[in-house]
Image (cartoon, rainbow over all chains, first blue to last red):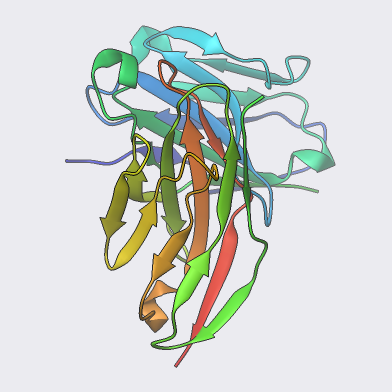
Length: 117
Length: 112
């Protein structure tokens, strides 16, 4: 079974440029998460989807960040314009959520490392 | 709000040493507790979990016991190996909610 797939693995851009990250979750997983991980820190939730609905986006900086999960499967996270402080690893994870009868275990992709110059 | 606090690293041990990584939590309900591990160059993966008080999660020689009275979920291993070198994250999930909150992580170095 394929795991969570993220792309690109690495991205280097200049500040004020846009960037987009893509995530393909494990088939059948209804819950999808985007996390931000700064160096030496734990993952911090940006947004959580239940199917196609964003149920928790309270930590998403909506002035420059946007996300979508079309048809409740793949998801895209966009930053426009990027700032120097956005340099980090963006993690996507999926799960068959507790509310859907799953275990709540998160399955993570390898992450997309963003460097803003 | 809910939170997780774990001991700061890095932790450096010799091979076959005993390992403890402390984790305490704050939650309004009765959370499920997890340890995730991130090996170099890889994504995070679940190491073990416990869903109720006094449960013991175990995997790959690691153990952690859900202690409600001390709100703790300390990770232990009796004899570490070089291959255990990684970053370990304690996490919780409040029941009835799929939100997972992570600690800051503890980097573990095992010397041969």
